[in-house]
Image 1: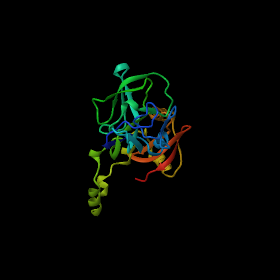
Image 2: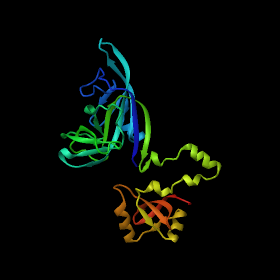
Image 3: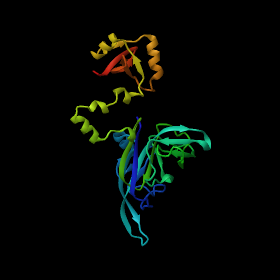
Image 4: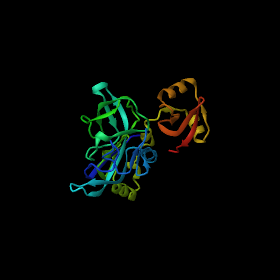
Length: 269
């Protein structure tokens, strides 16, 4: 599920000092490997594993003033994930899962991480959820693909605002004050969406009442070949998770194994 954050910056990105070539706008203690960027001892790949994307890490840098004096500043690194790649050649457009407008990103020094990229680079249009029809021209590996990670240095990011998680946007959010008011009247359920709303990217299989009873008891059910093929057609690569529904109600989240559905989480709705 895609998360979108909006960034605001209080410090424009300067040219800092004491860096390797190509890393002039990164925090001071930044090193690059074949498939990662390490900023002040923090691996950006490890940061993604812990926080998901988009994520941000801020570290110290030094700005050289006009008189030669060095002034300490903070520089942020934002890591986003490619969500789609469309078009070919000069018309190729890459979309990422974070809003990078307004954060002073230095596109000339972006790095792809997560895998070694030794092939040629091409100029592509980079789009974010806030820039549906425009974008920045950046250089990325010719084999850039959905799922790849991009790290880019920015000005000091002073604030983060979560604007979307999957299909859920700010416009559909419910204020805490409203939830409190509904709580006083025991009406919280009016603000709740069905649980399957958050699971719309998982294939659904309708089961009988008898099979639903077995799943709720934690027992597996046997699928007929037609059901197996139906489920396989909707599974994402590497996934076994299936939603079992009975009478329009979520019964369980299951794993499909050897022609059987094994419940991993049961719902009593």
